[in-house]
Length: 380
Image 1 (cartoon, rainbow, N blue to C red):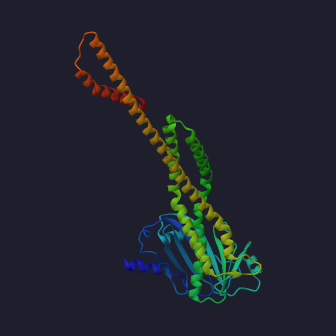
Image 2: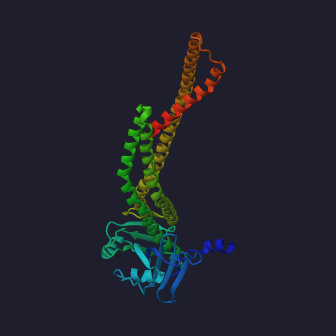
Image 3: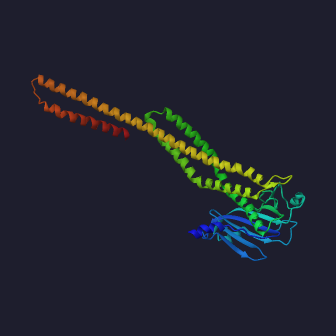
């Protein structure tokens, strides 16, 4: 057990390298026998000193495959990658997989004095850029997904050694991977928007009806509220894990951006600001949707409690009335029997008073039985 806990400290090693290189990073989701083995977190598929090195990491929901291909010099055009999604899935042992994201990071030497011509030559659009690592590097990206599903980022290495460069590259591709994973909850939030609006309107209607509903309609109202509560709880259960994962991944993205220690590049929007400005509203939508589901669930359950309390009060009053009614009916029946016995006695027909005493429990029992039969008939 202690060994497993200690292994977590070393579960995500970076690929250390220096010099120009192309880093290809692919994230896939799927089923693999390896994912269930918690000790099987990182696999180095190739470990050539001069050639490409490929690293496979198994996460809870997805698998990442990262390949570092050294380059002889800074390229004038974007180099062609060698890692395809099918090959990545094969290396990870995924039998049934789906594509999440793909990022290519071009590692170059020191940044030129003018970034514009180089970015235009590499076909970058509206680019965000930041000096990172306390001035040791500069990162640029337009955050656009090309037709082949690839996003591109350039990292200019001013003063990073192999170890710092490997960790910095890891932070950059983790920002992209966890950003995409966090946004998987956004379609659910958009889908639930109109649904929750309908739930809100239905809850308001049921609450208003609860105020004015007569005792005879309590059961039907309770059934409708219970149905609404069941639908809200079902929606919350279906999305709880997704929204929880969105919050966790968003926290990682924020931490990785903070670890970049970025500063402004004149004429460009900051890398982290670009991500946060477009990423945080989507995350907040997921958080707001999860909060609305929780509030609707509490509100519907509270309305059920109020209605059940009202029903219990009505039933207690009804039982009290039934009890008083049985006593009154028994009293009047006994008076009738007494009048009948006295009348018979005046007519010369003597009846033993013991019969009057015996009639009391018989009358009470008959009245109680009649009330029970009427109640049973009403329930049926």
